[in-house]
Length: 154
Image 1 (cartoon, helix red, strand yellow):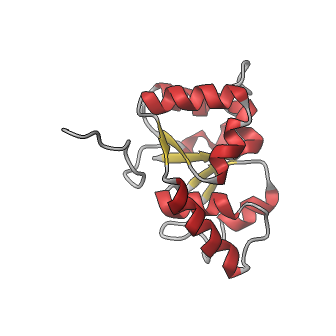
Image 2: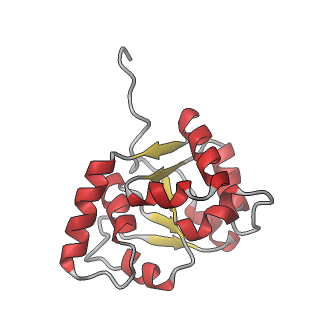
């Protein structure tokens, strides 16, 4: 399974000490049960947080984070924006979900909650929101997320 981490939760997840709400996410990554997915403008936002930049680079090397093609996410962001359905200012996060198939989002943005749960924006399956350690049951393995990019010769 893949998780999208919004920039507003990046420091909670990647900076020491990890917030109690993010502890299950970090443990889940260390158990190698799932991956974080990011791309497009979300990459830029996450990489502004130095601990997130370092952690995502390391997770990517370990196959625990997947960086999506920037152009694919950017094109999908334009499609999402053109629908006029977004309440939040985060169509790029909806685009990451649509491009990757990730359906769990860690965010504290209530407008983004509405967008991510809107079946006209995220469907097949619908999106769910991880907000706190109480939602650790959302961190389970599924096969709806892209794997790490294949390497030539493999």
